[in-house]
Image (cartoon, rainbow, N blue to C red):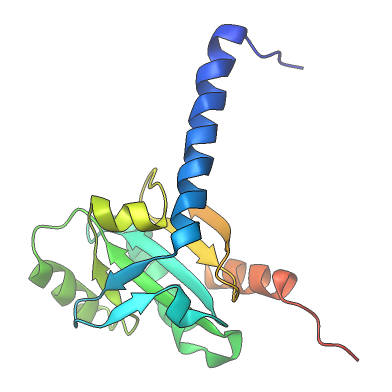
Length: 164
């Protein structure tokens, strides 16, 4: 069993506390984002639905690999889920919209920056995904690619069972 060294534990503990506080503050106020078509998306506006927020970049291979699954999740109305993609680290809006159009992305795309990211939570790598439950509470976060199956499985496990 590994022991915690006092000199190293404090900075790690403090960093964890800061990340948890930042995430809780972000989720307490929700978010308000404007997509590339000028439509506003807010966490409150999606009350009653699962909301998956995915930070990605056009140059990121794992981001590109998960896009078909995100399209499928967004298009499947049975899962009561909306996907919002937030493009990070891009040259200009046209680069992002052309890329998304080329892949037939039909979920909203937001042009991300530090201010947008602060509304959701820390980004430790791309892709980073946050999942909110229908009550608007952040219930999951993942750095790295996700799959349709993993999201659907998580939602199934966390959804309330219908009463008999």
